[in-house]
Structures are given as C-alpha cells and as structure tokens.
Length: 103
Image (cartoon, rainbow, N blue to C red; front, side, top):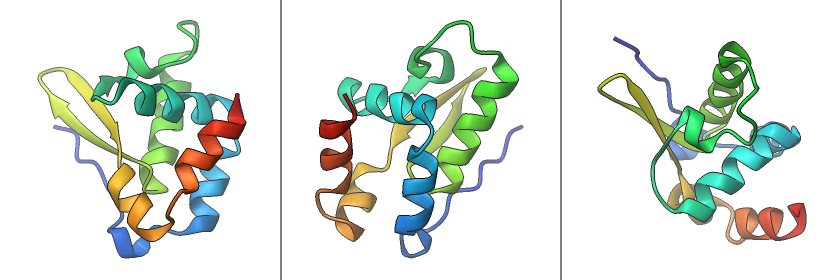
C-alpha cells in the first residue's frame, strides 16, 4: 500500500511552491485540478496523455512534497486534490494570481 508524505501547513514554503510550479507540466496539473474543483486521478489531471507514468508520478511527488496537492488512494487509483485552503491561509491570493497569469 502506498504511503504518501504530505507536509503540514506550517511546513509549506513559498520557495517550494514556486519551485514546484516553475515547471510547465506541474503548473498545468495544478491548473487542471483547480479548474475541476474535485479529486482527479493522475491520468485525469495530466495535461498530456503521452507522458510516461514514471515521469507523471515524479511530477505528482514534487507537487505533494511542496504541499500543493493531497493524494489519497481509492482502490487502484491515486486521487489528487489541491490543498487550496492550506495555501490560501498561508499565502492569500497566491494560487489565484499564478493561475490567472499562467495562461
């Protein structure tokens, strides 16, 4: 069984968030998750179906370790959701501003 590491809200840093979102694939994954406003599997949140699973898994690990997403296992699927409230509490307006200017 997969055990996911999620930093506490206090351990989420601006540097880690910006570093994680500096990659266009990860930025698009977070954008997809925010726009859908639901939990999505890794493949549903992926911006490109041709990304190898190992690469996609690495992107999700980086987002998780930065505190941007929470991943849970439901059956054989990994469901992902943006930790919007935690990030909004620490950095008000940050995600909204980044997503607005990303497109």
